[in-house]
Length: 209
Ligand code: ADP
Image (cartoon, rainbow, N blue to C red; front, side, top):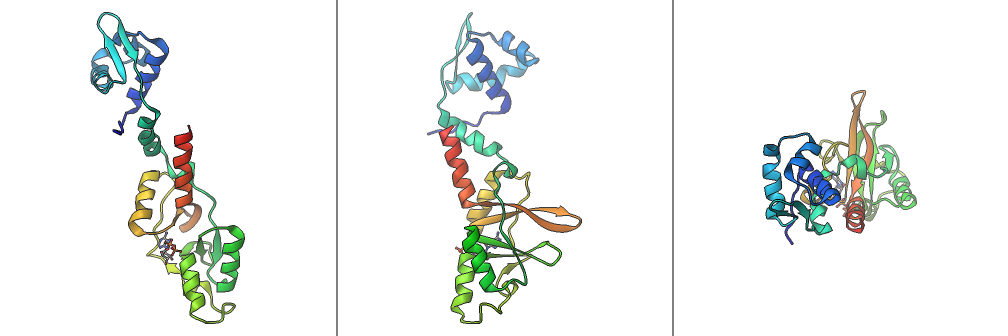
C-alpha cells in the first residue's frame, strides 16, 4: 500500500470536491479564497494520484481514496497531549515494597519517581523491581531511589510533541513508557505519560474511524 501524505489544503480540496462535484478549479479557488495558480500543484497531485478525476469543460470529480491512505496523515498530526494517559508516580523515599504494591494497584508497567519538591527524578520498570527483589535485601527498607533509572538518563517528551517522535523514542531507547513533562516554577513536573498501550489504542482508534 502506498501511503499518500496530503497537506491540509489538499484535504480541504477533497472535501470541497466531494460536496460540490463537478466543480471547476475557479470555483474551488473562490471557496478557498486563493488564486487558481495557487491550487495548480495541489490539483495536479490529486489528479495524478487518482483521488480526483478532471474532466475537460466539466470540472473535478471525486474518484475515491481508501481510508487507509489517511492513516499516515492522522497519526502524523497527533500531538502527545491528545493521546497521553495519567502517570503513576511514587516518592523517591518510598520503599521497594510500597512501589511494588503501587504498581499492582495502579496496573501500570512503569512508575515515575518524584523528589521531595515533586520534580521528576527517576523511572522504575517491572524488570527493575524484579531485579531488586532477586537481590534479596529487605524490601521494606530499600528506598526506590536506590534502584531507579535517574536523571539525566530519563527519556522525556513534552505535550506539544508529535506522537510519532515519541513512538520513535520508545523504539530507539527500548523502553515501554515515556513521562510527559512540563517545566513549572523551574521544576520538571510529570503531567502525563505515553506508553506502548497508548500508541496501540491510538492505532486502533484511527483504523476504526
Ligand atoms: P522492562 O524493563 O520491565 O521491560 P522497560 O523496557 O520500560 O521495562 O525498561 C527498561 C529499562 O529502561 C529499565 O531499567 C527502566 O528503568 C528504564 N526506563 C524505562 N522507561 C524509561 C524512560 N522513559 N527513560 C529512561 N529509562 C527508562
